[in-house]
Image 1 (tube, rainbow, N blue to C red):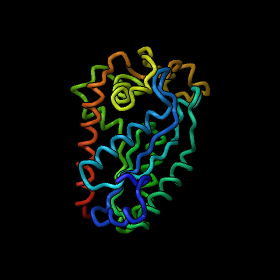
Image 2 (image 1 turned 45 degrees about the horizontal axis):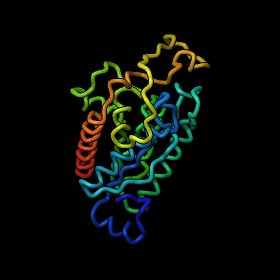
Image 3 (image 1 turned 135 degrees about the vertical axis):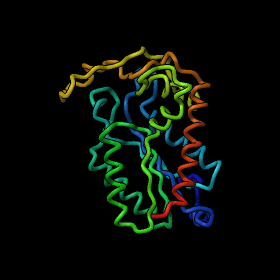
Length: 239
């Protein structure tokens, strides 16, 4: 059940089938010279929509903005503060809760450290506030990397490399513009730098040349299966 396309009557009827909702979080962030700025959002939303075909599940409209520090100097990246991200997530979950939803999966396609921690902190702060809330905060990329180990060839593949290029080749082939070069950036250990692009010029962390449509399909299906499993676990969870 895709919330943005539903009427209020359909939403009300949907509550009879499930009280579980997935909220996709993404980013507007560079993904090399070959992938769209919305790559993170696309991946999380596609997984949600596919999972909703398998089980009763509400899928909220995606949040397109995230906290992007390491790519902040690259063209096209639009970042928000962690404070804004936390407030936004908490407001969305509060409103979903008010509408009768009780099990919330926050699925983030963006895997930046500060971004992930902000979402996790927001979830922790909501638990004592909303007594019937069950909430999970999971990173879409980590699910893909872990579940797709037997498929992925590139060791340490992370950003706009084999995994993400395969995923977008599968779901949105028209948005893939050629193939960027293999790249593994190296930042000065422990130092905070202003010009991050100096140490990461191409915006890729991995090897896009190893990507394929078939890998993208297989990895996406594996992530969908884990999300379906997580939804069932959340619905049965009791403390």
